[in-house]
Image 1 (cartoon, rainbow, N blue to C red):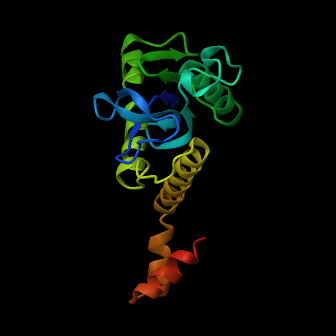
Image 2 (cartoon, one colour; image 1 turned 180 degrees about the vertical axis):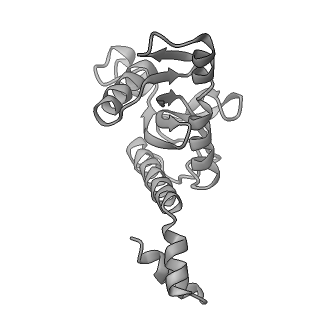
Length: 194
């Protein structure tokens, strides 16, 4: 069984003063209000694996001329619906969770299955924890939201490439074949994967 998990991670950053879309708002990772950028993220989760699909920045209404009436403004639910529709075209999943909302296309499941499935969001939490702790999703040094989004996408690409190498044991295969001993030889072995 595979899930599409949607979440709203806050991305705090010490240098957010004067950064586009950074506002005083609730930051889930800190469990308090803080100046942070907020995004809507999507991840694919099954019992065997999890991986991030997309992260879309949320821009508060006051970032747009005319606020919520501006046709370019999207609230978090609208962004989540777009991510859902995009994922539907590419992935086969049987249930969706968005923050505390859960839905499934399986109507004949037991209560235990529903509860087990409802608890699956650990996968998206794990994805964003890895993205923040290992790939520094929250360490960007740019101010404009389109550049922040590019940085976040580079983090997703780095995470995906690392996950792919790990899942397929490619690094172990290359290291066993080439037996690198210097830093430069390790670098060349890793470059041969790309």
